[in-house]
Length: 252
Ligand code: NDP
Ligand code: 8X3
Image (tube, helix red, strand yellow):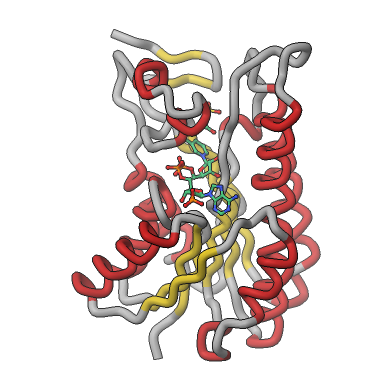
């Protein structure tokens, strides 16, 4: 029977690229995200191209009851998840702490921290029941360093870093691997979301250097997942060659 990967935030960017790579490797997939039309489109495309089974599950990771009900409502066959990729996440705004928007802060903390926790608890229990599992958490260079005006996004990704370390300890007796992947700048819809649809401002983030692609991070995730059973990659920080740290990018 094919292995199963559950990927949150599979409607775009890193999540969609990771779904494609796992499909290419013969995994069956549970794909999640809020935009049902895009989810269905990705599932249809990958099913046609790779002939793998794909279940879609549309929910907002911030809505605890919806997460619990939707995931628990999946047919038993889909609960034998081998790999969970906690990818759904976002940044909202880039303002100093004294000017930040309360709603932006709530959206980031509720999605990046609480949403990841809601999904992880349920899937970790499935993994414990089935005696195997690997959880990949998408952190960020923003979870290793802070940068000007990154305040709450950086805090939310530092929380992902801490939770990854904590999960690794708590799930150790169950043989569940936990890997945190911390990318630098990846050109996806991330900055369009951060700047609330301002595509011109988003484009500027990636001007003058070669940013990482979503596929680069999918390959990194696959590297961690494809190690032998006795090897766990605790964490990987992956940067564009032109980026030294969170705040230093060499632009031509
Ligand atoms: P995208 O904006 O391209 O994709 C984000 C994905 O998250 C979408 O599929 C979106 O789906 C999903 N998502 C967002 N909010 C929710 C929610 N409340 N409930 C369910 N799904 C949600 O960004 P990336 O692919 O770049 O980001 C993926 C992850 O990588 C994030 O955790 C991000 O913080 C992290 N990251 C990104 C970097 C970058 O430079 N791009 C660098 C470091 C880390 P939908 O809108 O359909 O719900
Ligand atoms: C996304 C990368 O540098 O915009 O996590 O925070 S950064």
